[in-house]
Length: 117
Length: 168
Length: 350
Image (cartoon, rainbow over all chains, first blue to last red; front, top):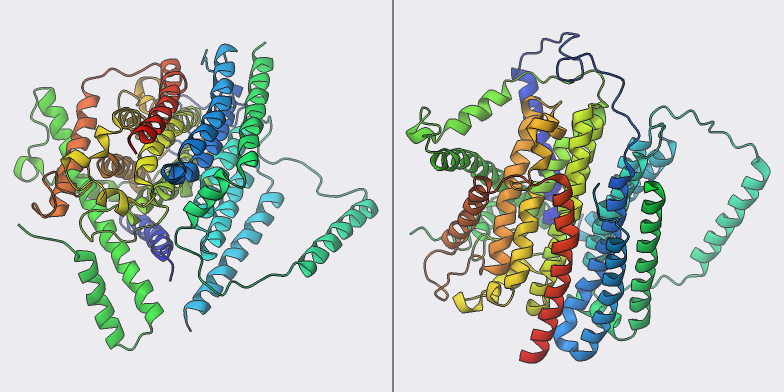
């Protein structure tokens, strides 16, 4: 058995317990549906259109930046693990790796991409 | 019934999840549902990595594909104008060329699978596999490691260009 | 004092004894054993959350010179139990415009992701369900599902406030995820391990705490973790004056309760991680075998939970542009600087 057996069991049992509490609540709670009650909340007004709107590209840019730096962080994890046993060479390698990306970060900064407004 | 049976069972269940999830991804008419099924599929792939004792890869799979790529897709989906009830015709008008291309790739895949000697590892993978990956990355594969940063830089500059174009 | 060392092993042996007695094979015993541990852990998490909610209300009240809950039980200790029972009986209003499967699974994913972290949190000596060899990476990976949950809740509700709230939260969480992950690299460089059990074992007394060698790393981690938990001053997703209730606007009853629970579970997780990585985890500061290990764990963790509550009544909420700018322009460069300094430090002192 691998050390991840516990993870699989936690996933199944956790989901099971949550679904069980939903079921329990379904049995004991009242259910009095009403067309007005089931209206989407919009400060008491009749909802205007749908919420499936086209969204601001700004969020997408942050998601892109996140992907890039997340991938970078992942590459640094195995490096960090062996750094002490490899010494100076590994340090210089990492320095080049990070320097290139820090350059990218400052480029994005200078171009005003990190500005919210 | 033994460990090996359970491992096999887990593998088949996960493979089923991957394939079923993949089919839902391409067949769903709701882009957001597709993205969510993609998350499910990629998570099941991470499960297969766990079955193969590649824990580091499994964690990386979840972190990069579920955490980053799939999420990027959800954000990307939000940029499209029509999300639900996409009225696409699921019919291909160029049946013959499509068939030819598919058959070509099928043959290619079968040849590849046939030709690859799948060696069965007799010994359990070493417990310090993450260290081994780290050491290899810093010694033998140090050039690809550095090239990755240049690739990421290119992606970053691409993102900046997209952002600038949108703003102006 | 009650010593819980090896409690998990004891539970394990007890169950294994019964099941093997019944003639079940080894694999069934193992699966069932983990299932029991999962249920026990769920119970523990539930009790901790009930306590934390009460405590948060009490701390808030004291800081504002109020009394807080006083009626149900001694100083209102079982107030949250009453609240939980109330939520269980609340009608589940699911508006007809929602995308049902997405809306339904969002709270489940959010809570289960928060719960699964507890597989590899070391609660005390021998009190860890499974000391994963990739522990830190596992925790970072699993917590990214929280973002998926947020996005699903925001989109599935088909409500403008939910959508804005969900996307704002997701953008915030991913922005702070980057400095948080990078801040942990310093600890990994020193510890040469991703396993939380090993990292705790290396900090066997006060002077070996990693916070002394990673002060900047800890500062970045703690600020980013506060933001990840959506706590003040980073509680924009819950800015009720502008977004009603953010991504939980269309949730009620037990589904709302799951989001609420997950939030407090994450708060406890963030504090537990902070002490495990930087403050010696369950190790006592005065060398080994000084008081029960689980007491040290709970004491230290609760202190950091208290710090989060303290933040809430100390700092005003940030503006959204300040929030994103802070992650990318301040924390991220600092995280790189921390890696650089750690690298130089190790090279000099090793």
